[in-house]
Image 1: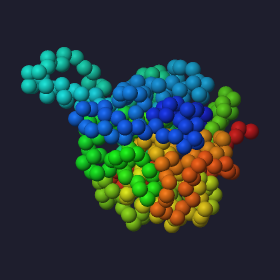
Image 2: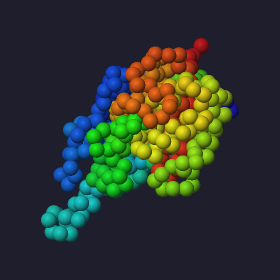
Image 3: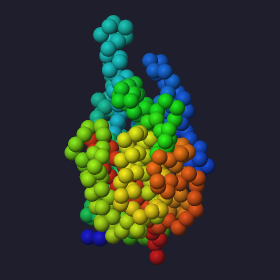
Image 4: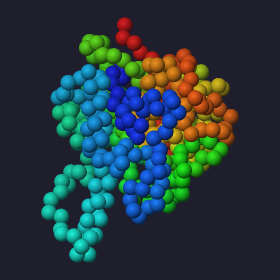
Length: 386
């Protein structure tokens, strides 16, 4: 069954604001990364916070959903809508708070906890909250694949429509990763930057954690046409592989990552020459940027415009790929490419977009590579309803 899947709504919140605000700030070369000290046990570090304090995971989920539903001109409830909402961290912040309270209770420093909702700590807490928010009894999925989570979510929603199970699926990922455990873990690995995020730059230091989320409203082209919906673009295809090698590093040979790119192009009926822009994973870490640059240089004919927006939004982990997909769709809609904020001097001989650039943009790719060797690629292209 060949059902065309289009995007009719976008909800996005980052440290730079909502979708329109974030997009304009990126085009202007601005960043939402600042020095913060959300926890007294850590020295100030660069972070991309939405507010002054770490955001609540469920509240952020509901806000992003509300924006997407309004953007798609839909009215709640949506009882038959499919839902795929992923997260790599979920409600980890609440779990950490509970653990600290329990520790203090054992020390006699705090009264016992008398009530809390166990459901808040389930891995799919965000998906449950989303289903309750939109009032759906349709399929509910909650992928978790580290930084590759977002493209997994889009791919699963795409397949639900392609298989005829749903006419509409809301897909995306939400992250509220600013917690003591997350900061300590990335710091222990030596992955955190000390001043800011500089993807693909000679002076890159590492990643900067960022809060945020994005969801896309996917619909069959037939449903979108029937209700006169606006169209951002079309989901053309995807590629999903894994390295089966290291836990926290890519396989630098790139065999599985290359396979994911080729899968995506084959399923999308595209060639390497058909791609007008690549939104790179671009974390600003030594290994990722070198690995990703090698893949692009090896596979794609130059010059192909490339940028990563993590220098502006920070690395929103599982949500980052859906933010990237949203920026690809905005590029297609407005025919303008976002700059690689933070990049001054590149170490790699590729066509990195350093300032917003006009161009003819029809087909785009969004890359995302996660811990455990998760390789995901999605193709998004132009689509109008005749």
